[in-house]
Amino acid sequence: MRTSNPILSRWGVGRDAGPADAYTRRPMGAAVGGRPAVDYLNNPYARDADTSPRTDGTAVTMDDVIVRTGTTLGTVALTAVLAWLLLPVDEANIGRSYGLAMGAALVAFVLSLLQAFKRTPSPALILGYAAFEGMFLGVLSSTISTYIAPGVVVQAVLGTFAVFAGVLVAYRMRWIRVTRRFTGFVAAAATGFLLLLVADLLFSAFGAGDGLGFHSGGLGILFGVVGILLGAAFLALDFKQVEDAVAYGAPREEAWLAAFGLTTTLVWIYLEVLRVLTIFNSDN
Image (cartoon, rainbow, N blue to C red):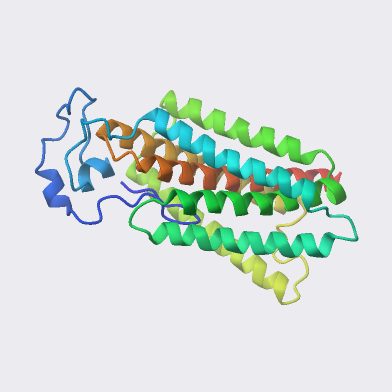
C-alpha cells in the first residue's frame, strides 16, 4: 500500500524489485530479527524493498524520524518568523513583500517536485523546500494578521497542532485504520479537492470575482473544513508509513522522506485552518 499525497508522492521505495521477489523472501507474518511480524501484502517496505531488513544499525528508527521532522519544521518556523519581521506588509513595502512571497512559493513548489522525482531523499532539497515554504507562510500570515483577522495566526498554529495531536491519538488507539480502501478513498477525495481548487483559481483569474465562492461565507468555511479533514487523513497515512518503515527496517535516509511528508501535510492543514478562521473572523 503506497501513500498518495495531494501535492506529491513522497515514499519512493522499491523502484527496482518486483512484488514477486518480495513475496517469496519470507512467509507473511514471520518475525524479522526480533521485530514485530510484518504483513507483506500491505507493507510497502516488505513488499517492494530490494534488500532484506537491516540489522546492522543502519535502519531507520522513530528517533531518526522525530529529529528530521523537528529539523524540517523548525526550518519552516524560523524562516516564517524572519519573513514576518524582515518583509513588512505595510503600504510602502507590500508589493515587494508579495512578490518575494510568491517567488518563494514557486521555488518551494519546484523543490518539492524535484524531490518527488528523485530516487533518494535529498536533505538539501527538503530543507530548501522548508525554508522557502516558511518564507511564503510568514508573509501570508503577516498579511492576514495585519489587514484581515488580527490574532488569527496564533489560533491557526494551535489548531494545526490540535489536529496533529488528535490524529496521532486516534491512530495510536487504532480508531483510525489505514487500509487499501481508506487510502483509495483519500486519494480520490484529494483529487476532487484539488480539481475544485484549480477551477476556483481559473474562475477568479478570468473575472468571475470570488471564483466558485470558496473564499467567504458558509461555502468557504465548509470547503476549508473539508481541506482540514483531508489533511488529517493524510496525517494518518504518514503515520502508517513511518510505522511500516520502522517495523521493517527501512534505510535510515527514509527518515528525511518522513519529515518531508509530515511537513507538507502540516503546512496543508495550517493553510486550511487559517482559511477557516480568517473567513469566520472576517464574516463576524
